[in-house]
Amino acid sequence: MTSTQDCLLNAAEALFAEKGYAATSLRSIAARADVNLAATHYHFGSKEGLLAAIVERRVAPINQARLAALDVLEAEGNFTVESILQAFLQPLIHSEEIEYLPTIIGRIDSEPHVVMKPLLEKQFGEMARRFLNAISVALPDIPQQELKWRFHFLVGAMLKTLTHPTPLGLGTTEDSYEIKFQRLIQFAIPGFSAPVPATLKTKGALKTKGSGETK
Image (cartoon, rainbow, N blue to C red; front, side, top):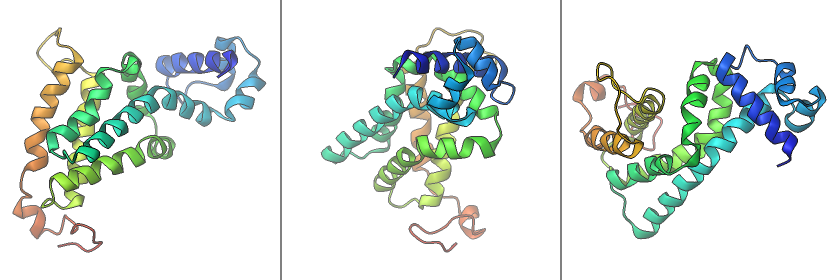
């Protein structure tokens, strides 16, 4: 990566954090980076391309570590809910990018879904599918449609922990991310493993595993 690209990424990341994606122009990014506006188009094509590059440089190393940890579990045949959740969350704890993630995640979460959905699918789609398949192996009696919702809730709790690390009413806390995510894992294990309530089954809310038909 060239120094010009680094300057643009750093400037865009700072401005997106300060003003939000929609309120930040390519011209202001180029000015903050002290480069010609044409360089922005040359290296990233558009503001959407610039945002995608910012997310990728922060998130890609974490997702690579997640998938590497999952590969180890697959090789060992060690598919428990706890081991899978450890593989998903542990790379966050040891990543140098974690200091940047809360701001980035907060801004992504506040932008229009139509802008963010393609970006999130590209960065997280395959990784999420791999982890869902692993959880399906660990919990074969839970329909995959239900597991998707439970994984969705896990991701929501993870993002909340990153962006709001102190619970309401607790004040400040010195707990490390490792302790926080260990708490999250212990909270999530019974949530993933819980039987599907009869009310969800009878209302046709779930699809049978591997089928497009509702129960």
